[in-house]
Image (cartoon, rainbow, N blue to C red; front, side):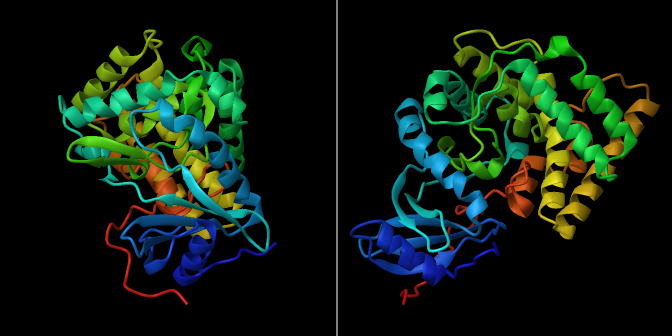
Length: 360
């Protein structure tokens, strides 16, 4: 079925229908757009702000349904806010739009995290709080559940699929395969994870984490996935602060290869970004991902020429720049979901997006 696209005014009308008593007085589109969701910020007559999201394709409507099952269960268990649905509205072509309260805060730039800072430590504690949740909570919400070796094989399959596109440099394919074949590095305890953490999805205000957005990729899997965005872009000292706070907040000591897998996940996000572009037949995304992969390959070749022996590039290397300071953020801003389902636009990208336009 063809994609459906809605204007900000149409989204405001849907928000009014979804939430009793919501009388829109102003509406504006999110500054950053995605390919699978229309998103708008709506202010009502009482001064409350809301975010309304409508899937453009029935195929991605499952993301809305998954979040609707999980988030009400999740909110009481986390120390920060999540976008619990306040109302839904059925769409003529299938699926539902969802309306949530507008969460305060601005996206966290992992490259700006400071070593020893309260914000870096809180990022670690918030991720740890998520990973301490009983997996049954996620299982009962119907999210995917993976064992450790099953997940390793899934990542190997991603590499094989990326290789088949012909856009991944051989030096990266060899590097990733070596890392994934080190079975002893993949003996982790599966935990509840966000699955798509990036700076755009973590909100902070006055030095504190206030909320976490976009839970459509939640699953029970590798805890390293939720640290990839920090490992890929933060300075080594800031990463140490995050990991130390994370480790102290976990009930059991994290496995010794957590950070290695997090760094690998940051690189593999580029491959999955490429695969998302290929699946969506989006030439711009394919070209951008290909360029980013080649930049990373140049860094790897330089490391190997210097005799570097690391399996994956760690923070502080030029790999940060090669990956444009975090492939997870690219995946959100340019094409979204790396499993061939695009992430929605970030409704918090422009804090002053709403304009005084009365919906018709």
